[in-house]
Amino acid sequence: MAIVKLTRPKLNAGENIYFASLIKGFFLTMKHAVASLRNRTRGAKDMASSGMGITMQYPEQRWDEHMPEHYRGAPTLVTDEQGRERCVSCQLCEFICPPKAIRIVPGEIPSADPWAKVEKRPQEFDIDMIRCIYCGMCEEVCPEQAIYLRKDYLISALSRAEMVHDKKKLYEIGGVREGLVNKWNEIK
Ligand code: SF4
Ligand code: SF4
Image 1 (cartoon, rainbow, N blue to C red):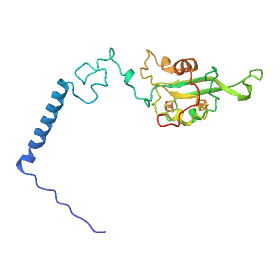
Image 2 (image 1 turned 90 degrees about the vertical axis):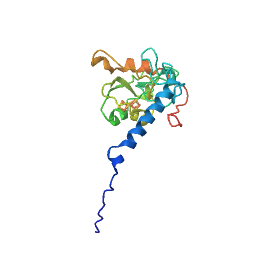
Image 3 (image 1 turned 180 degrees about the vertical axis):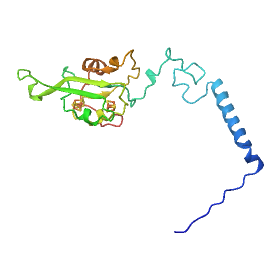
Image 4 (image 1 turned 180 degrees about the horizontal axis):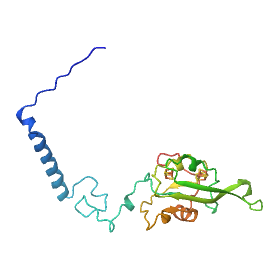
């Protein structure tokens, strides 16, 4: 195999002290500073910003109304329009979840129940929001369109235990998902 020897190009005095790069960087910073003062920064109008175009005064100002449709927030469970749990406890999401944030205890639906033919629904369903990395794989893998990532992003608590969302909390955040599920469309 032929060996190619490369010679390092010689820098002139100006290049050695990075003078050109310093000047370039200075003008770029000035350009952004002036744009910011004139409220002409990119996205300034879309963002509920301070009026200066750059800084959002959180928590008084928030992204909420500006979240894109495809934003991946907290994973949640959803019911259908008749209040039925869509989840059938197949545990695929538990299996696929990379950080093992999901824990499911499947439960049998009693034979007297009108939906007994579905056979199973979760007895317990926990998502540990400290572990969750918001990857969306649970949503992708679910055959029943029962688990969705909502736009909720303010997930905080005073203890680790509170950061584990149980079934009740997951349905509370998730709510109802009506009609045909559109997880394979362009957005979700
Ligand atoms: S979003 Fe990803 S990390 Fe979070 S629960 Fe779903 S699969 Fe697990
Ligand atoms: S949420 Fe979906 S993938 Fe997870 S156990 Fe329920 S039906 Fe299966």
